[in-house]
Length: 225
Length: 222
View 1: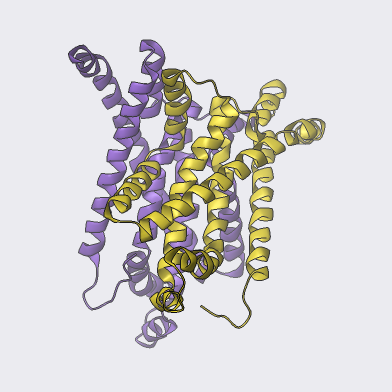
View 2: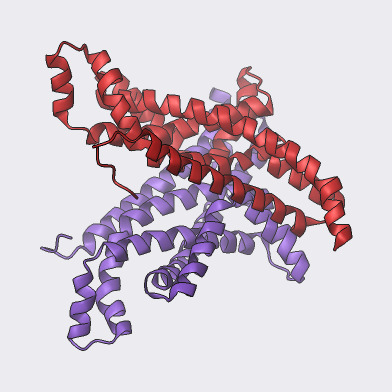
């Protein structure tokens, strides 16, 4: 037992922490880009011109419809055939961002549509332009309303970041797999890897709940799910 | 581009051969998830406090760990530790089924909780036992309400089934990879694979929508 713990501490922990760091480096840019893409696409789907609406609709159809793993393969193995070479890390971040953006856009779209039409009209009537009304009046409300959904999507992103290993970006799952093969201890190491993800997901969901409470506008009732 | 189309034409039937594996994995996982998820939901709603806690931990566990890691835990870890011999195909169905049961339990739980409490009380007051009230009054309504949630769950499991390729299950993505490596037409082959999944999710959600209309009780708006 003592030997096991010593082994974990000396051989396993440093590697897994490096892997976790890599996972975090994958997750944070993907989450930020995904949210930005989601806000743009979601807004276009509601308030864009017909052409832009169509484009946004097709974007969502394909990036939500293709399995994420297929998308990653497309970026990592597919693009070099047309002359674009991406590192495993870049391919993963691009793949996660684009896919996450499609999901986020649906939450933003739903939130925008749930805001009463009078808000937009009132903004017009006090002299806001269309664009300013959307950015200063509608989106601040919509993003707050979309937060529970967007937070869920972040949790999914954390879990799906493990797929980066399939395009040879060695993050937490990848490190775990290498260690497990090397030391021939599959069960122990993968359980530790699983526990790390579980911890990460739990911490993030507690943080998201806190954030929801913090940015709530007093007086605006907020459906608690 | 024309080269890509020729390769697709030549290999389409080989890739579509994986269709049955994908459909079997998804079908197996969803049915297992439904059976188990139903029990979990009932446990969480009607069970005593201990049972509720156990279900809560189960759901937290299977919703918090990535599919890929669970596949590795089960296939490389548990099977050799317990000295059981199962094919990657079976392990994939079991793992996807366990994950899906955690999600489906929450869909069904939400549906049960959304029913007015009076339904259960009325059934009891007519002399039905708890079990009968749940089986004949609550579940027929709750399961109908769960169909939109299932449609979502179906699309998620359909897309996640591509990950089972990591264990070597020869589903659509695995076969696409074989073809792509042989012909060097990765780009077009993966577009094709994605489109096959897109069509599968589309057909499934349409069928579930039709089921939803078919089992709707006319005049009963919840």
